[in-house]
Image 1 (cartoon, helix red, strand yellow):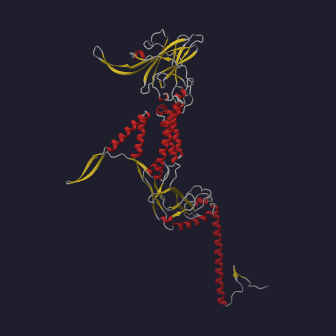
Image 2: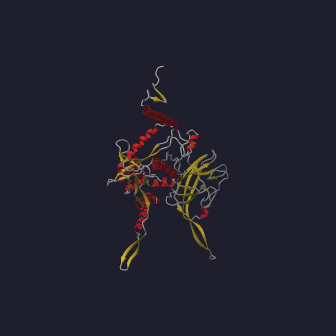
Image 3: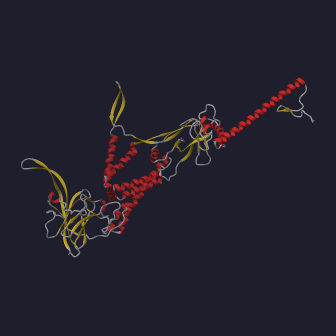
Length: 594
């Protein structure tokens, strides 16, 4: 079976690139179970000083070294891959192969070697001595060995040593090298030995296909069909949920970015566990992709909402001529109007007394089956609460006649809020509340002696919940060889459906009083006049000029009134009126031409 076929599952699931060529593999002889002791298996060989890890001396000007190919996200596959590393002490080997490198003189002859590998587990038992005392000792159990005979050439050469697979349990392992005429290197430990832990990663398991048709069937059966099946189910369920929730969840794009970052971090931190799980059940990545695609597609479903706008107007009139005891009057005079009235702080450019301000709050609305307006808030949790029956009904406090129908624009309704209310809107969106079922129920029962309280242990929800979690762990073990993953998914589903209880919210609005639109029109007219004043100086100058003109007109009226009274007195005592009209104490036309 070709290596490219064997690593097809790994390439598709993990996304790692590059398929290496098959290197030289030494022949392996059959293994056996032996009675090697722990003292014979524990030695780790002699590491020369200042040498790289896993280097062992092999005579004059010769040495051996063992290299291992790790399992990781960015590891390049292949016998010639630069990802091969020296085997370090205490390292766990996750592949079923190692590389044994030799360095000898270029003029040396070929060398026959035997490579022996032993695996074992440890067990602690109590031993009774002849004197009657007892002690605990650790012994080797389940010892198995196999050997490989191969030929090493001069210079730099290497052998690929195949190891036995250990998918379920981790085993202790030791490997040693000897020449054919030398004694067994496992029974008589020497310097060329390497101790390590071995547990086969599922990512190194060969894919069960050996033809192009097998690859095609494997791809459709494990990748394509699960993806479309899960995506179709997610889309159908999402459509029903959107219909009940009146709108899609409208998840913010930032959450998709955060999710992608978390996914990358999980791949880096827990690559071994994730890769083993996906290699065991490659359809799982297709199912996850189908769920994500279904959730993203739900965002495109049509919504039954419309936009409503809540407005609260306020208008503050200021005194353009700060005099008397008005706060800030002295400072306003001292700096020529550069201080904001009543604040003591610097005045902003364009400030003028009498500013019309408005607080605008847009809220999406939807009409329920009963015709009641319901506020709709974006978010996955709020969407799930609405899909389960929670609502945030609109409860107005005031006259609904202050609602204005809008013909054009992004808003279909406009509500005027009470201008004197500091908090005219109180919005509590729909949400969830974590509640556990009561273990002990109290029930009042009428008896002949009176009312008594009975206690009853309510175990049914807990028994069903624990049964669900156990079944989830069993299904996870069966499908993806990971009971923890099944338990997490089961716990999440149980929390979302049973423990998280949907709670309805409410939108209370203190609307403006009746005929507020007339007062608003007056206020807008006044504000339009004030808007012509671009700055305090302009407004102050205009008002000063207006007052000066009013004072001059008043003085002229007083003069005319005084002149009229003198005319009446003259007619009374002389019987004649003035020849001409008096103005400013003089009679016009009273003197003829001299």
